Amino acid sequence: MIFKVFYQKKFNQVPVREFTESLFVEGESEADVRKKLASRNYNIEFVTPVSGAYLDYEQQSEDFNVESI
Image (cartoon, rainbow, N blue to C red; front, side, top):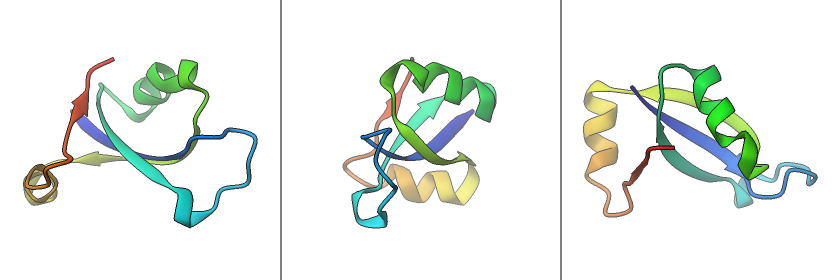
């Protein structure tokens, strides 16, 4: 399953919407994805599964890249 992760690069900074970044990660569950990203020290705001039409839409972007960690 593919998840979209919204995060801030600096863990110790208050989240500011303008600095939110996103990435796609392959994992079994939200907890699995959070565990895989723990070593990166990101301030994860939200993790959501991506499938169906939403995944098709995201794949149309030239920046679409699924990280397999």
